Length: 411
Image 1 (cartoon, helix red, strand yellow):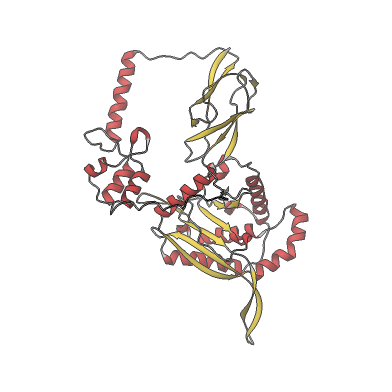
Image 2: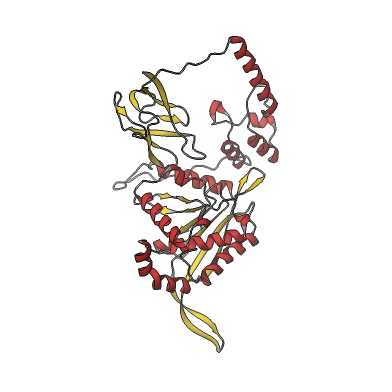
């Protein structure tokens, strides 16, 4: 028998650690490959992790409530077979390797001040742009590993640099009958992300009124047959996503991300869709390569993700990689909104409620007043890289796609 360590697996891009919520097994239990052994929480999702080996769990290395790093051991397991022999290099070889690594680091690492404090290239680049001297940079408190200055640290410093930080708002003391509730973990993360997004991206929002009569009439005419043929309900969401995808194809500069002073044009069109959870929180599952789906396939995917999101059954990989996000706020009876961008994306679209309105209709015989089904679409975009012309033209293209809708479920 041999003891090996089970490592915390990769949970998706930008996730570096997670919190252990609960061990699903006990020390001494036997497990098979893929048996669920631990429940963890990331900043995106709560999920269960399966065992990578078959054997007996002998010791937990991370306790409930503690943080586990991606790629680091979480428990020991005793498996059948001899332990593999590990070749230990001679001391001289180790010294040579350490020297080589140190020289390589000196070659590629950004310049550090005399006190040895490390600064990432991104932090140094921000400092140069904001004319922050090295002496001033050394005075910034760091919240990163080993007290390193992070991007958020230097951006927060810049925000308060011109003067004293604004005083915290005075909260009226709780009175009799008031209910004080601690934010849950997800609400805290949502709050922090919203603040970060507004600080990072200068938001601009454009609006357009769209005639949804064609879409509404088509959906009403096919929804029963659609349900019988595909065993799926046809909602407005997949139709809206198709319109966004068509607009991204025409204006690919909206499907980008910002990395310092670089713009990354994303090859895939991955659409995030905001889903409201029963507890009032919000989650954004992602439809990867949304341009590859037919309407029928897209409907199935939308319904599946929405249902599993509300039941906390999403997988970590279904919450990452989004390149553009949409929110259907019409489901809450809202006319319009000013949505906040999901970083590091550069735009987000919100669709309001569809309502019947008296409208001027142009006909060959002249203008007449008629009843049309109208919707307001709002488009928030990052003005660092998306100018008003691009943001407005993209919004108009989505509207045009919907107003000219003919309906196509396959091919």
